[in-house]
Length: 355
Image 1 (cartoon, rainbow, N blue to C red):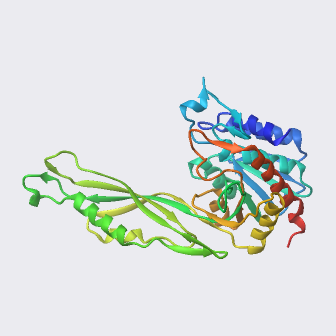
Image 2: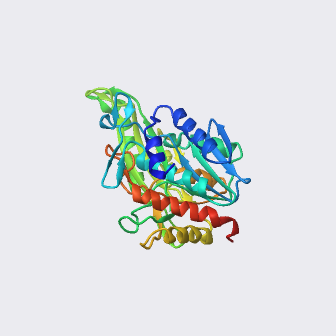
Image 3: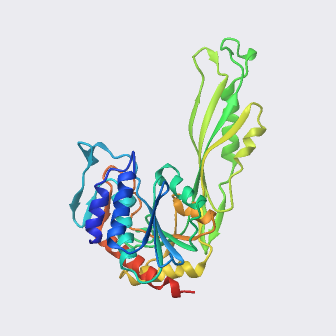
């Protein structure tokens, strides 16, 4: 089966509410097309050939909910035009997954491929696999890295930001707005907390010579119950993009009376800790295309963060371009998928002898 045909098959399977059917299709394909040892768990599908080797290709088969125009009577709609395949999950990331599966099938020597569920829910599949002992020495996470250094070039990302989502809660005492001195205004306390946040400098770091800067943004504020009531509660939502080993000191807001801080989600950033491995993947990417790829950084969190946190040396390399994932007209370049197939196969075929 070709990369194109497998991409079409995977993209056609709805996997936003329940990725089980997509996982079953991947498992069945691996059992029929390869002689690998295939393991199916609640984390996803993991296949190993000849013991698994040093390097794993890692993807996911769940997707975000489709737009209305991406479905027809409950089925996913697929279109092909101008060498691009459109459909929910084509870029993020069933196209690259198809390329990786075909490369795994065709590569020589020991290797591993994993496709997890729940990446779009914070990486729950990757976390479960890691807890169960999934610990490759190296991993190429096949999220998008195309078009970062130049249009159409498939680069290699050596770092990406994490995401910490949190809520600041301010409490006060309700009173009639005609006599505000009898209450304590929670919104005022919340705005004081916002002032503290505005003074914080987002952290920065360098990864293999590349700058990575965090971001901090208040994304919502809600408080009060009526025009004539001093509010006794107010909540502020905060989106923070984290970098390896550094965090903004959001906890400073708790020095304000009546203010607490709760973290709802903390997706770890990723930093490749091995320059030689990064350049080995870059060499494979260079050999697979006429353009000159580069080592780059990504703004988005991926399962590479969980793997790196657990001790796996990671990079990100895949077909998706900036701005394609999660869109109503999501698509992927078929020629770039073929390129990714060559990158993955070249790397898997020589990684065992690499040092």
